[in-house]
Length: 208
Image (tube, rainbow, N blue to C red; front, top):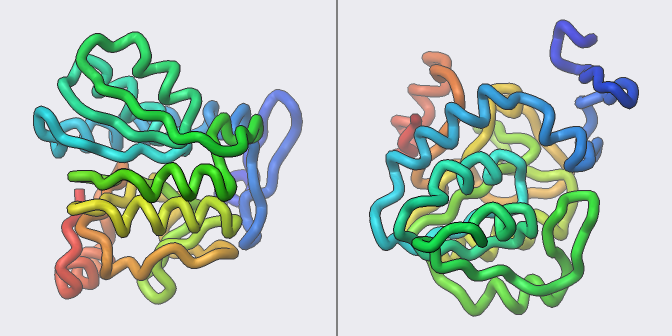
């Protein structure tokens, strides 16, 4: 199972990755796929323009994006306390942290208060991750709360970027977020298969 990427071993045990609602807490997720997340963050950095207003979600992939842009002149809105801590040291980033109920599992904010806070803002670019993505069912995540926040951020963004490592492709999770063809671009750590490239090109979704 581990060889087929269905199982992840950590110091605390082993975690099964398959299942539409299986979740890993942030302590585990921050140790996984680090090289992949660094590649994705580098690609995102090249797509961000000076003075952009961007949204970053609470995913650990977005943590790496935050570290990459810490010295950029930008406005950043985030639901993540960890990203706020990273960017709070920057003298060039204008930082907004949403309110709401804090989740120690994600180190981010969620719930109705977060929804109301997020609805106030609009973005040049939104960078969101997810648990799974496939061509047929689009972007999906493990719970409705995170899916709702992603939907709002994407609806309020001029450009919509999905940031996922290759292990999340061709899978589905519990709650629908957005059809993949509604995204402007998808960013991952390796080259897409010919089938993926053909579909993305046909649906005018850029890929990096």
